[in-house]
Image 1 (cartoon, helix red, strand yellow):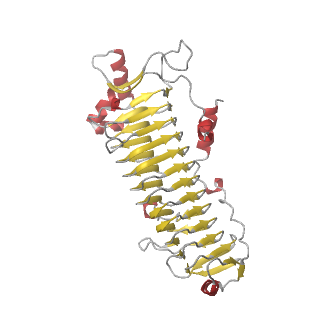
Image 2 (cartoon, rainbow, N blue to C red):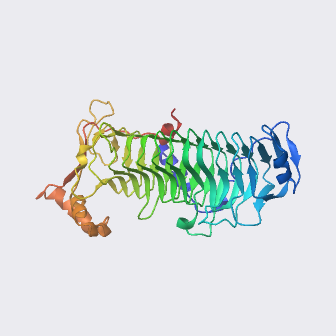
Image 3 (cartoon, rainbow, N blue to C red):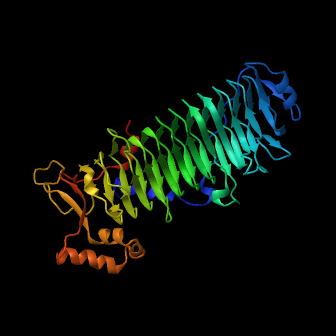
Length: 433
């Protein structure tokens, strides 16, 4: 089996809906040095007596919340140290600069959606939330108006019983800058949100069965790398954000009528590089991106396979480059809205599985251009109600007729003057640094 096919099998196997296929998440961190033991029932008093730099190690058992860390105190526990509250509300508030919460389990059942009740609420700079397990979160980890916050190696599970739109955000950054969301396992929530925030990194997370794997809005300078977004509605959606990098992510099974792996709206200076996009309704959706004069969108060395449409243009693409990508096994290479000029995008050195040209000089570049045309693309763009017949024999016959009996010229969707002859190994793209 070819390497590309092997990776696709692995990715699809990882998309199962059962909880049994998902490990228990990252292990808790080691206990801090000089840690003071805290028995069940003593947490509130221990926090009241603690000063900056103190560390509290929770004994196994159920510790009463809610609790609030007002100073640079570390609260640590193993998974069997559970913080829970008898009444609805936020469970742990980190209000002291330099505070750290690590290792414990937080039982967030009973939270209220309309009150934004969070398992963990961060409202101070230089806070660390690490290795925490959060169960039944309405809102999981919420960070507001803070800087240099680290959210690392946590396991956040949402309310499985609630409709997806009525679940809270599993991780939410709001007006939060220079921070890191890394190595978290997130399941069955609504969205991972980064809004009105600058210069943050979302690295190496696994997000399953949610709505938005990561949703940016007015969040400039964001880097999204090495994540796995599986079995959601949208992998990554970028809105009104500049200087965004998306690199080495796997996005699979973003399905349904609204399903898309990457969405770009009214953003600019965006780089989409070395991502593996598999079995999504739409691979990359582009709407008014780049949005500003002099801004660009570069889509480089990505694999887009088994999507209904690899690329969908909602506006004519200007200053958009597709270079060195693989497009294979998709229903359509390009889908366009009515009245657009898709050939405004620049395509160069991409691999297409239906290229029928040749390479006589052996440089792995086709000697003839690749051109994608479609008679039905223009028909559906003009009459959207025909989209229900997409993939049906009637429209296939229309496309075939336009080729065999060219009485009218089908719409040109893309032209690549030097297509690549061999596909990438997806694993090599993901491993490249």
